[in-house]
Structure formats: structure tokens, C-alpha cells
Image (cartoon, one colour):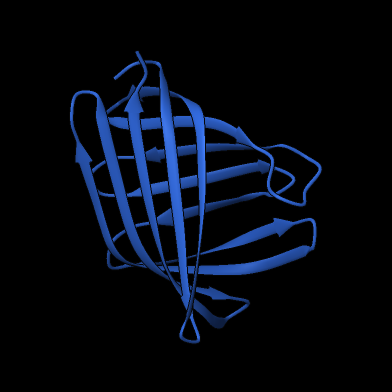
Length: 140
């Protein structure tokens, strides 16, 4: 895999018989250390005024997303388990619990794909069922 990659993240949310999806496409920096894949990239969330620096760390057993800046959190996705964390946003803090239902990693020489299905609780109340599809492609 090349140092610079094209990153596509599609997040889908299903709640109260409604669904919503968002997609982010950006260039990210990639490296592999001690058997773990790492991606770093910056984003400017819609309606926000400050940059969020993101780090994705994963292997075939878990996925971790760390956000720093206008939003601060560390979300851990581990199949069959629940993880709680503090999520700091400009609108205020909240407690987030993630229960990972499915996690798969497809790894090829110049392409990777991560698929995660999870249930999200916010401030100890059910919020939604969610999916994340992450595609990582080597740049020429």
C-alpha cells in the first residue's frame, strides 16, 4: 500500500424506520506498524469552524477511531462487545456506547475495505443502528 491513499467513508444510520447516509472522500496518510494499519486525515465537519484530526487504527480483530479538534473522542469497535466513551462536541458533551454487531476487513495489496455494523446509544438511550463502509485505495 502507498503512503498516500484515497479514503472513502460511508456512514449509514437507521432509526425509527428512517435512514440517512453521509460520505466523506479524502486523501489520507497510511502506514502499518506492529501489524496494525493506521490512517490519518483531517476534515472540516459541516457547520463547524474547526478542523478535526482523525486517526483510524485497525487490524483483523478491531477498529479504533480517534478524533481530536472541534470534536474529541475515541470510538472502539470490537465484534461482540460494547464500549462506552465520552464524546466532546461544540454542542456539548455526551456519553456514547457502541455495541459492535459485525466487523470485517478485506485486505489486498493495493486496496482495503472495512465494514462495521453497530448499535449506538447516546446518554444511555438507544439512538440508532449504524453501518460504516470504509474503502482505502492506493494512489499512483
